[in-house]
Image 1: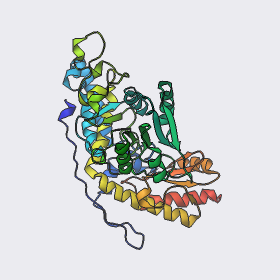
Image 2: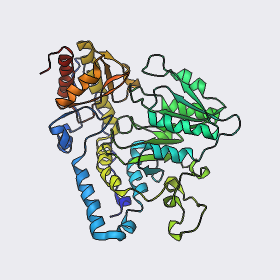
Image 3: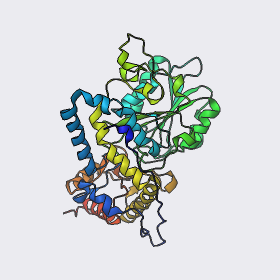
Length: 411
């Protein structure tokens, strides 16, 4: 089976706004249908989609297909789709990212994807700064600190409130000394959403490159990376895409790609890999030039049902549903007296709401023990991330149970 022959469904129905009474408006999303495709949600309140989305039922079938191809086709499977899988699977993801086919390379995780992209950069003269923001995810920080050995200077724009970053301050930090801006579209602790289009415009004005981490937005916030002018983006499938681990990705603008020659590379990225020439590499075109070694095929099978599901439901519809459910979370938290450490303005909020309690780590464990799945981040709070298949009743149950546990009344 050739993955390149599989086409995603891309229609995007929209949701009406919630009415003035705070009730959810009628949804074009067939929630019962999709819940039936996600076995875990049948028995749990799954509000941890910002960390690990539930497995679609079809993912098990895809993994069985991979195993059957390995068993029955053996080495022939490479020429029957496996070799192309790292780019063909990226083509399934491309409409969700708002980019063209042939521009997304799949990798095991963001650490690898970042390292590949950064290996193609130098930091000449006075243009040696990398601009980031406070509260960035640690993988991005760890990889960026390694760039200092190549002469990079790191500039971190602080957060005044521990939730978001002032856009004007961030834009002012990007100047003619900036080589690269690396920021998350949605910050993982607070779910604060940065204005990627404004940042991309500022980067164009100053000649800097923008590398956007969309891990916490892909699949829950509409993305138009090509239209916004984003130079490159990284992310993974574990969260809102319901694609499981092992399927990270790297997008590079097709106009920029030919000017980059990654040194973190491998034979999969060579223009003629089966010629087995001695080095140096002759990079392939498009997304292929950003690959490394032999692809990890099984995760590329497992992630496909999640991509198809998100594409069919439509990210615009998912976003509208997400804002309704997170808005309900904020309102219920306020009513129960919890401190909300996520943006209250819907346009600034991703798909998660973080609630602070001084005993939050224990309360989170208590919730999980009662099959209400959430997580806790130190210095921030308990994170709840409803997805399009969650219900208003699940929101109410989660916050009410949290209030009972905080008051010492949880059964």
